[in-house]
Length: 301
Figure 1: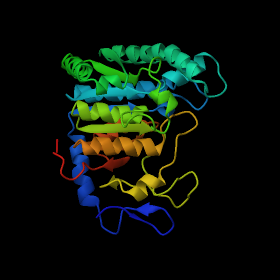
Figure 2: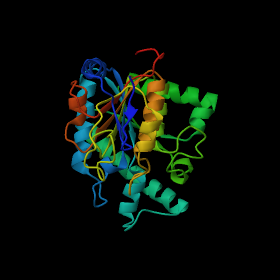
Figure 3: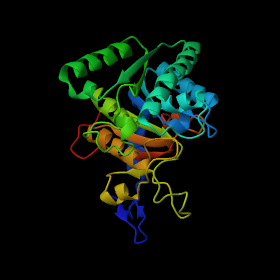
């Protein structure tokens, strides 16, 4: 039974008891061997606009721990524009396209240096991969991308992926994903595409929220966390809010990403990247975040 809308306009998982199904799907998460982790801007950045070094290093330690368990991890990381804006001492979110691109160019090197330094301390290599939509739409470029990612994983490196905002304007122009020709216009969708193309088992979208709620918890005190979503219904999609003040995605783009990931036969999870040890807990099988089941008819991985 799929989620049903509530008379109040909120939705709920329905009258069934989902514990057994949730336990089974979380066991599959715990057993995942290839994982894509998307770290949002609100995870990478502090509320004051500075880089959240402690939080980012905690994420790096968790990824290193997963790799010691024999898992492969790819990271899709936001934060370049925010870090560039912080370096330029901008008081407000950059508005013009050229300023956003300049911020991305300045912030991307800072972002990679943090990842590189952190993973080096854990004895791991990193690799920067900057993407544009053409890398997915052009067959030759996509084959080259796939081969490169597979080789990086074979070499036990941690690929750090981001959209190349300095030359690609889709993400910067389209905070709601419109105009992205169904491909990607934010890193949520980018992470889902990467997850589907590398045939990962799980996509984890880390943000500053605990998961999907029955309503907006910032405005609805009765809103509760939905631990399991079997199907993303139109009612659930309509309940999602837009982008936040710093990030470019929002719950609507996360649901779109979850739809791509589950449509490819994988599992998607939305969880709070500001919670210490969230990845360790998730892949230990704990009931954290919201888990999205693979769509019916897709092959289980």
